[in-house]
Amino acid sequence: MEVLRILISVLVPANKVLAVIFYHEKFQAEKGVSVFLSFGGFISYFFVEIKTSKKEKMKLKNTTTTSYGDDQISEA
Image (cartoon, rainbow, N blue to C red; front, side, top):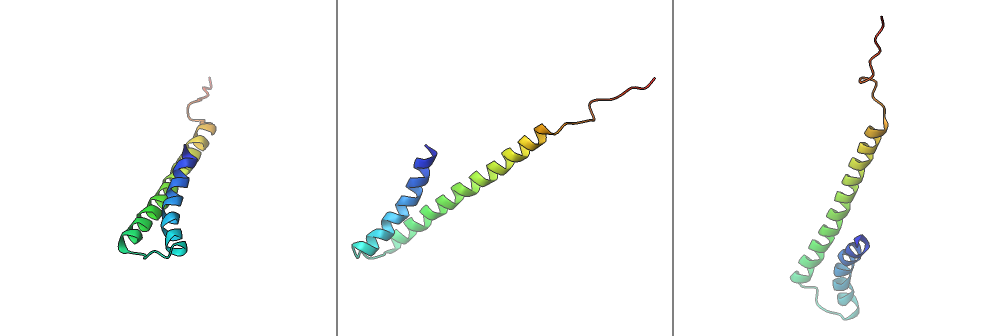
């Protein structure tokens, strides 16, 4: 499902650009806005993925370290 989302977000702007190149369509404002929003969504998706990946790594790192504060040694 993740791969499908990535492919769709890449192919939508690519479709617009390729239509301009191969079919010699005019690159009007609507296509420009569409391409801009699609690339913006694509970049936003990867930014969020990187951010959550870093949080998960930090959480995993914090759970694997041991805490010596809980283990108190009492001397008599």
